Image (cartoon, rainbow, N blue to C red; front, top):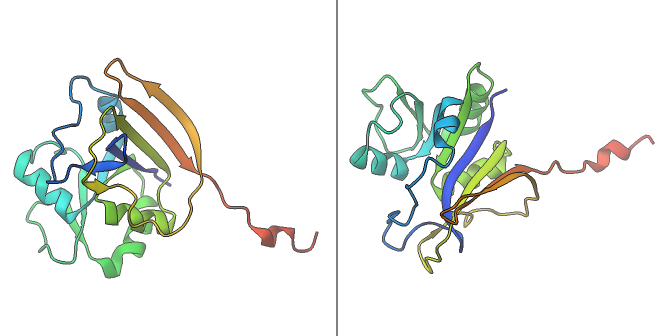
Amino acid sequence: MRKIILNLAVSLDGFIEGPNGEYDWCLADQDYGMTEFLNNSDAIFIGRKSYELLMSTDPEMFGALKMYVFSDTLQPSQNPNTEIVKSADFKARVEEISNQAGGNIWLFGGANLVADFIEQGFITEFMLSVHPIILGAGKLLFTGSKERTELILLSSEQFSSGLVQLRYAIKPKFDLSMLDGM
């Protein structure tokens, strides 16, 4: 089974974009492990708004990755490397894709899509690059999460810029039914 890794930049106060949708606060002075991450990934799960933003600013940024865009409003893409996934097909299609042979799958966003992936238990790892800035307003990363999700720290790395990269896995839930028959 392929890993689905949420890899996002986040401000210290939990925002993934500023109040006007801006992301100019994201540090780009170093690689921050992105080359290695991309070399181990061959697909990206992305929401419609994030996809449209990327296509309008840097359409070649993810050129080698198979793109799965989650949207009920976008029309099928003319690009053979891009597939539109409708909400009615969400769970079955994610399970099918993650069970195919291949590299890691980058879950890029947005916040509602992340909440859906958390709710379904699809995220294997969280890779959050915490930038040394407090935005005060904008779009919060975890606004759609409905229940407590405990995490296990896998690693942390501090960079000279002040950026801290945190990697987490979801802590397995203890299943009380395992005690039956003991």
